[in-house]
Image (tube, rainbow, N blue to C red; front, side, top):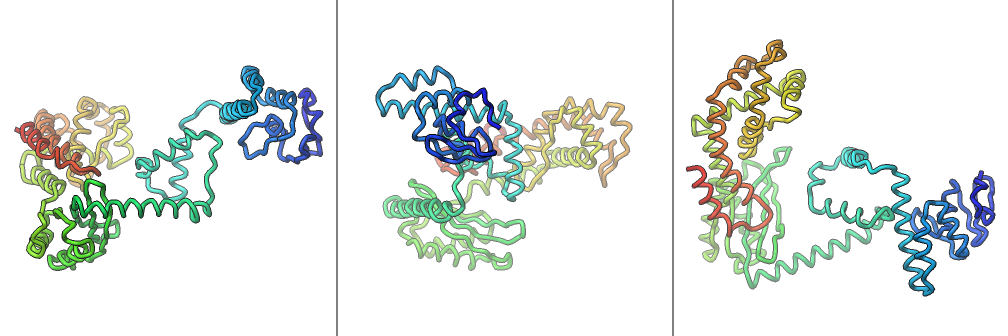
Length: 427
């Protein structure tokens, strides 16, 4: 039932759970709060405001739902219709924010984080999405707009928003292509494999005006031969015109190298450049696999990580001593050795306390080829920590250069100086 202490309810007709506004005769169901916002003329909440409600009734309704006298004075002091409308909108926005805070209680970031995690899991969305610029801009845009924002329907997305975005993308591509006749472009080609071990050759074009994706060719690994690579890249060159291409950047693998030589012979105006990212990765690989003492340090570090994560009991004990600091695992990327070693060096004292504890001595877990005693001896070895620090000093400068060149923007102007600095640091 309607609370009688709210004096303005004489302007509302109670119809057994439904309420009718006596000014515009509009029906409202689902609770008394909807008719309150209707009479207070507060926009949002999917409720139409009353256009016929007198000013004194609006003020009463506004105060009942949590508005302030200060805002009301600000709204009523203006006699100009335009100013009154602007103030009313300001009241609506402020009240909407206040109501939203009242409905949600205290700001609870963990609750919002859980909603995001649920969204990603239920819709099978990659976790990497939260780090993309477009997603960050969307979240910031919603926050700036406020609680009044409503998501567009799927039909609006399909019939309006996506087609409009497609037009803008096509305009961007057209602008980039038109610039090639003036500045030329760089053709970049690389090969990669997905989780199903399918191989693809991607070809992109980059110029001072921007970068665009040209084509992707799915290839079987037995077809990745020099003539095949040469024919694929040649077809793209013919499509965009050899006069519009300044240089060709390709992988440093043997097949791509020979294919590049054949393309230079066919198109004499092209200039072939080796991929800096691929070259630095090979350099890191050679250091980690060919330099004996570095190889041993990486192997010992890998043994520590493998043992600590082999069992939930050991992992729980390690986290207890490291204050939940995690160790990095060795991945396929060439920089992972450096990251793994860095994560171990950061918790040197904690790991040494761990292997000297009585809880460690009570453990009875051994992995294939790795025993508790071997791991303890590595952690207690002064040589491991000394050479580990030295190996890190060698690898870090190259990893910094790798991160520089393996980015989405041109780093050609910085590459030479970065490599010179890396050489001096290694020396």
